[in-house]
Image (tube, rainbow, N blue to C red; front, side):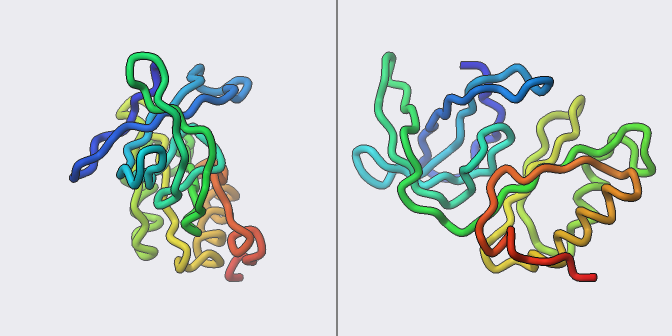
Length: 168
């Protein structure tokens, strides 16, 4: 296990691990540990946003199995929270430079939570709540991409996200 990337949020939390096939040409990790609140013997609610694991968002409830050495391995999402995950990587040679704070500033009006991968890799993973302004967020994402500010991907989207049109 090598992708223990997340700062621990406040509270009595456990780490739940996800195993996946790495994206070709991307970070070489094949696991990611997410902080979670244990709900039952084998379920937990995810408490932070995923940098690498697709299809999981903050607030989702996952089922896990305890493996060797007491590691909790996610086996399925059992309840979706309605949150989405948007990942933004600023273009170092672009107008914003390699600045995670500049990325945050572009989205500050939406009240999104986020984490930054590292100082060396200012990759920002945003938690987008179910009641967020999806159209406005999509417009900012599209504008930033067309202006050469960043690249982005949707790590977890809902039907409401996919059906929302940019605001312009």
